[in-house]
Image (tube, rainbow, N blue to C red):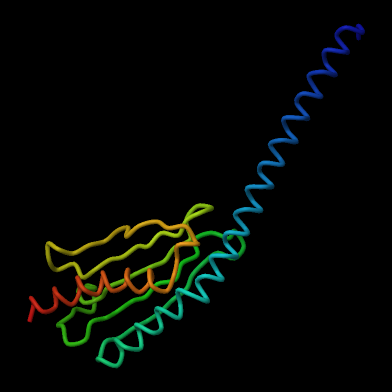
Length: 165
């Protein structure tokens, strides 16, 4: 190979290897950040979210409502982690096939930096709701925020229940 062409090839390969290294570094950094966020989400879920759900759940159970708290997540890919409070309203006629007396509130690990709050309320009325209740940084997830978001959903559910009765 001519010296000039050999130099050009060497420069091309060096440039390519530098870009490849930057790309690898960026991917590794992003993966490390994602893993750190996932671990922090799990800590917040265990230390802040779950105790608030359990506290509210125990109070609801004392009033005759069924409560279930569930956690899911893919440990291998560190994705789709969430914790959900399912409240089945006592004293409301229901069907085994339609969740017309069940409300859900989920705290979900989304992306690399946020926690989204999802909710659904019973679906018999025009005022039913299913969807996002907001996205928050992990640092914003406090016991007070968790309780307020659950109470917003319960307020809708129990005011609908009063209208039914």
